Image 1 (tube, rainbow, N blue to C red):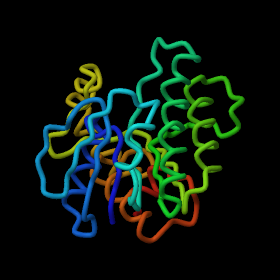
Image 2: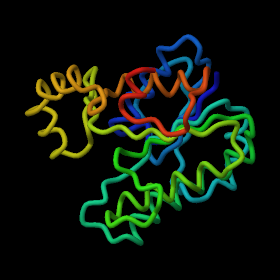
Image 3: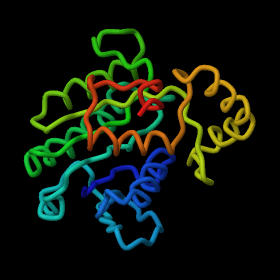
Image 4: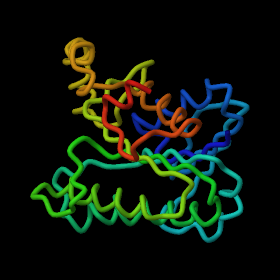
Length: 219
């Protein structure tokens, strides 16, 4: 399969990229982002694109792909809803709308989060915005679309978050997260498992479009 990956420099995206490059079923990976990953691999092509709201000048580069793994996102901490929606909803749909038109046989996997509000009417701002984003993606004419809602994610293989506070959290609670994940697989997954699950749903599909941590771990 040929994969387009957004958010490849973030914690989750780096994990997904690693699994794509390791998987023999993946023949090509195109990363799209404002910065290069710094990785080198025969499968990998990097497209550094500064305006992630406008793809009019690079559409030909986005044709011919079987899957998109959208791992791009930001924390909602201290953000106004309009600003968070612009980055989370508008940016995601800008890319997804173009990809759906260019690759109607594509499978689209989106990293959302546990607690996302599909009703779009709840009290938690980020959950409403994520819910609206998921709902809009599910209406696009992709072959299939999957919403990944992990709870806690344990980074593996030397991968770190770009947020120092999160890194401190993972260092301090890493062993506890491993234990929780072993005892309660619905609460914790890993960067490796997210990547592998995205590849698997692209190949085999899944009974439901929304995948929680337990589904991710099962895959």
